[in-house]
Amino acid sequence: MFYSIHRYKRITSTNNVAKSLAEEGAPEGTVVIAESQSEGRGRLGRIWVSPPRDGLYLSIVLKPAIPIAEMWQIGYVAAVAVAEAINEISELDARVKWPNDIIVNGRKVAGILVEVDNCGGTHEPAVIIGIGININMKEFPEDVADKATSLAIECSKEFDVDNMESCLLSSMHKWYSIYQDEGFDPIFNRLLELDCVIGQQVTIQTPNGVVTGKAISINKDGNLIVQSEDGQEIAIFAGDTILQD
Ligand code: BT5
Image (tube, rainbow, N blue to C red; front, top):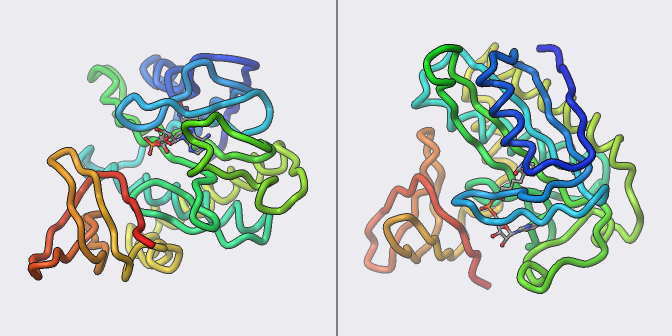
């Protein structure tokens, strides 16, 4: 896969622009990078705080030859790639908090947004992987301050955003190539090594309500398995994880 990089100073959201490019037939490996976003978003339309130049805001168009129903796997390819890139650059111990948070010392340093686009049936379906990494922020708005962190906060020094970008793109290239050559198993195995949820008491906010219990595993369908207090095992496909102290 070769990257074709589109750079912007300020746009609404790199995912929006990447989606439009995919719908116009942009090839796999199209990357959209912005210095800042006016409408950076997380899942369910939530806001992604994206101040100028302090973070990396990037979206990649991928077109894996797999059924749309399996494209969620690419979110885990990205999670592994982002955690490894952060660890390589900073020597921190970034971990994956199921399903899409990258955390350091219990706080979120990066987030991943996976959006599948069937491109109106005129082009091959694409999966847009949006990645936001907090690099040089020293502080955050009040509503995220208690759960967000940055590389600069954790390491007490600034990092070069361009360096993070190249490290991330090579990590994505590496893990996506492994995925294409060997399938989901190696991704899944690495995910389990980087996971910080299994074995923990958790509260998961799911689209169908709140589940509390002990996280006991992640299965190959991407579900987190939680054992509730009455011993029942619940498989959860999507949600927000809160780790209990
Ligand atoms: C995510 O959503 O974690 C996915 C974030 C993806 C952002 C990238 S930036 C490039 C690309 N273009 C976009 O428009 N998006 C992608 P979610 O799990 O829903 O988390 C969102 C929640 O994280 C918010 O509701 C806040 O509580 C919190 N949050 C917002 N900004 C944050 C930040 N910069 N750092 C840490 N937490 C943040």
